[in-house]
Structures are given as structure tokens and as C-alpha cells.
Image (cartoon, rainbow, N blue to C red; front, side, top):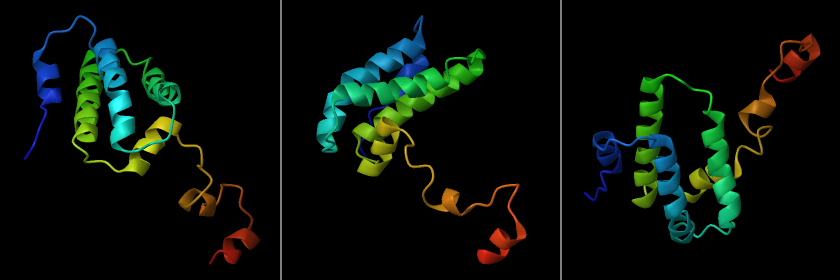
Length: 122
């Protein structure tokens, strides 16, 4: 079985700033990933989606959690490069969760649901 061992290499390498190193690794592989998965999305938009994921975790200060997230990021990159993911998985990452009102979320009842709404869905 093919393996790149990116997460193992990252764990054993002593980086001064592991988060920017991970971001640079992802940004470097991004054009290749877009080509591999035949995603018709400009690299700048895909990079913005990746950046939003990094910015969502920017407030985390616990070093153990940061190490875990960095290692998970390298594992995700490795799985992507080894083609373990499918195109919709990557589109969800690059474009974000734009369509949250579809599927099961659309069918959920809120806390202020009336009795008529409850019985209409039964």
C-alpha cells in the first residue's frame, strides 16, 4: 500500500512554527490536487477556503491541541494526495458549507416549532 508518511515526518520534525509550515505544504500541493481531482476552481478561491479553515482555529492556544490539528492536517493532505478522497469531499473544503439548509438540516424542527409543524412532519 502506498504511503507518503507526511504526518509521521511532521511529528518527528522540529519546526519553529508548524502551522505555517503545514499551510505552505498545502498551498504548494494545491494546484496538483485541483488537477488530480479535475476541480474547476481557481487556485485563489481554493486557497481562500483552506485559509478559512486555518482562521477558524486561530484562537486555539493549547499546544497539545495545536499539535493534534497539525498532524491531522498532514494526514488529510496525505489522504488527498493518495486519492483516498472523492471530489465532493474536497469541494466541501474548498467552497465551504454553502448549502447548509439542504438535507437533514432542512427537516429539523426548531425549539419554537408549533404543534401543527410537528404533526405535519409525522
